[in-house]
Amino acid sequence: MGRLWQNYRLRMLRRYLLWRAFRSRRDLRLVRDRTKSIAPKSILCLCCVRNEAERLPFFLAYYRRLGVDHFLFIDNDSTDGTPAFLQEQPDVSLWSTTASYKASRFGLDWTNRLLARYGRGHWCLTVDADELLAYPFEETRTLHDLVLHLESEGAVAMGALMLDLYPVGPIDGISHEAGQDPREVLTHFDPGPYRAQRQRRKRNLWVQGGARERMFFAQNPRRGPTLNKLPLVKWHWRYVYINSTHAMLPKALNFAYDGPGDSRLCGVLLHTKFLPVAIEKSREEKSRKQHFGQPEAFDTYYDAVIAAPDFFYAGSVAYKDWRQLEALGLLSRGSWMTDAD
Image (cartoon, rainbow, N blue to C red; front, side, top):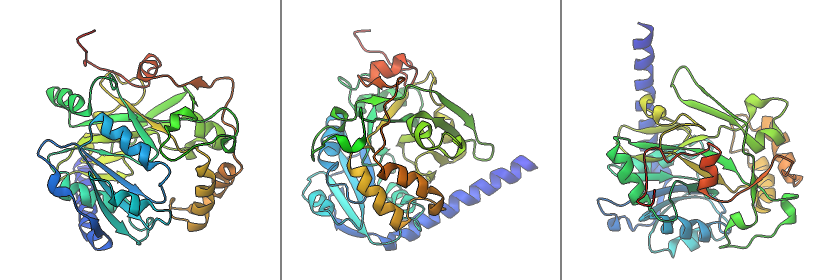
């Protein structure tokens, strides 16, 4: 009876979140609609942004190279030219909103709305502007090749570890220009430790550890960031993200990824947050109070970023490529092999 009741409650939660997503259409104003160019096999990328003009030129070039066919952007009241830039891009459809990011469950209502409306039957990559997906054979195999292999194994989602990249020295001691590959200046990462456990109710994975926990949450690791994500999903109208892209409903989707060490095909999201622009963004978000359920509890975190920390330490590793990440157990090719292998 307990399990039946819990499953019923999760079904009701999923329906409620789908209703919220449908209702959120009132928050979104269509600015540029190019969705008619979406073909049956198109791979879509969804991204909710605010003031990301510095990152977006490289972000778009990176994912175009990997094989994204169309981008769906939600702009949340940017003031730095982000909307104007996105309107000019031939493979971008753009919505804007001035509604509360926090009240929309940190943009998830808006994202789930577009996924439900445009993502059905498509492989959809849902990422932030500071996340770059790395996966096996990315230099020779596109996302279309990747999803064909996932489908051949009956998979409907691929998981990834969010891996923080950082520079050598304080984050205000580097220079980064719009359109530049952030990996040129964010050169290192923490190879571990990472720990994973399953949450009981939704069976969602919870991976923690890494650079941000070491730097900002060493005294209280449970408050550290969640590092597992399910960014690449073949979307169905019944699906919904419930906590960023960390967890989904139906709960069976959460078993698509077991974290670092998973032997199945999985990737890494290279997290490029810690450019110099992160300092001003932290000042803004500390005052806006839109990113956390209890924003005051994270003032110390924002203050630490504003102080331009130096993440580098004796255990830092210089980033090379996906093969290095595979050797460290942070991603896996699973059964996907190239002809050369």
